[in-house]
Length: 386
Image 1 (tube, rainbow, N blue to C red):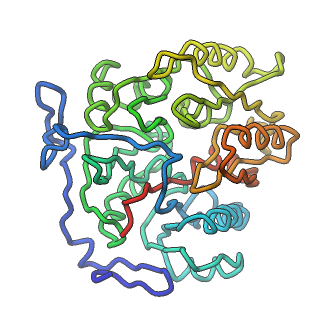
Image 2 (tube, rainbow, N blue to C red):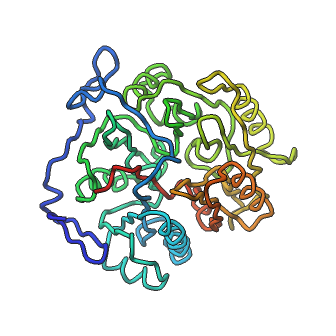
Image 3 (cartoon, one colour):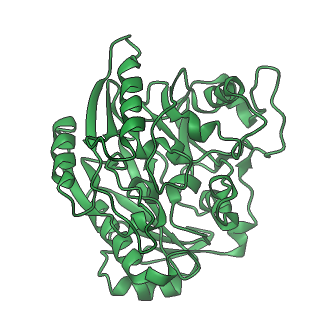
């Protein structure tokens, strides 16, 4: 850690680090006639692959809730949930935790008795905790990792995003990564909006990726071309239906449907015909049934019935669902909401991931701000950390 301070897992970035140079593609760069951005060293001409979440990981990235976020009125409860997630991950892999003030972070962490072994804390400013959407998307070029820093606009300008949008660039200079290769393609995209099978298939939603508040200058075909180049995508599985009330993301796929293997998809389902979600989630299930694997076979589908409706103090329904699970090394963390469907989700995911421990994590606090477990975490594949 030549350019920063590393004390008991805490890393303070100094001016020398921030003044360094990383391999960054300027967002103003123009694509060539084939829709490829002029990426240094010719990444677009090499074998690019977006890994699946079940592949081996080096760490999981989280952003600590702090006074400058919307968590302020319920800060202790939000920090307790974040601390619980960290404790659940550490037995299986490292955790990178970012926060704007390491001194305050030390004080706040003491009350939650978080183990220090395997935990690395980085002083980086954030606007919120939803690191899945503003953290680095890792892809591989000829087997070597590189980071993609998509533009983050607070889900189409709904919320402040200035600091979040700078977080990946700061992370790339922290001295913990094997690569300082960062591509900034100038595309608005959040990590929760895409899901990969690691073999070139991408699961996503039209409602989010084609929303006019993301990349209004791109049509569906143009967006597919750019993502195919950046992420090595060969097949796009577009969902037209499905939503959860209380979701601020315009329909991220990670709250609706997730790859569990190249031939298995778990998805949010609704069994109550009186629930507002029933028609849309039924149509989404029909779409999933029509999808085919790379071998032209139907996917094995695993329905995860959503819990009973939960509301905040203002009567706003909260986006509670189980598709927002997190796959880590040898385990799967599953959101829990103190609902009978918690046990159903755990059992079905245990059948789906027989070689992994299935662990429920209380996420009732997280859904108060529109997200859940997967939204608050970002996996860093093996080969990213030094």
